[in-house]
Image 1: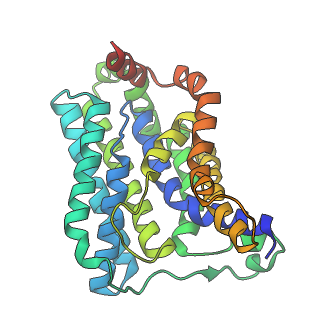
Image 2: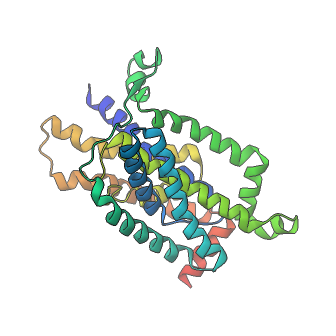
Length: 304
């Protein structure tokens, strides 16, 4: 396998967990709620997915459990923000540390457990296409589902009544309330949906990508997902590109090492996060100005 193909294939494999989380966060932010606890939801999903898979032998049941765990943590965030009026950014960080603490406590017993994980499935015919087949069609089932998730999410948000309610909650919540809709309920559902998807992303990481569980295994992927949403301006297709950019940076390090490149290991490990910082510096201010009115109020209150 050539270096470009290996890196691009790794971009899809390594970026899928972030893609789920970033699409979920896009939904929540479109409704006017930012969730820095996405990392915690991913951790909860990773542990729940791995633990339930280990106990049932069925990774699909594990993914379902991961979604529930991620959604439960997101519900905690939504409750304190929407019902108690807590600061969104501070509450997200608290939820993150809650997820980190709980998974560290309950995950110790699963560090050395073996599971029947997802395996790669080559899509007939398509997987034989030169370059494209290797890059896109030789992955686990959750990766293929993410290909469907992106256009479906875009369609729902931009072309359906449900999407109009979600966008209204973030852009003009007063108008939405005037027409008799429960803005808080819409935001609750959006945040919990974001947590469900982040939990699936975490489960994909543990049951399909790493095929293992260890403490803090997401290693900042939830924060990267939030950053991806910022420079993607809550657009699912752009979020897919940002997620794969991070995945490509992750894949570059082992690919270069395997070919004997004499590059400092710590420099290679920092490359994915450096790429995110560079993109945020270049696009962050512009994208912040494009944020829904509800999100702009959040950041204004946080800096006042």
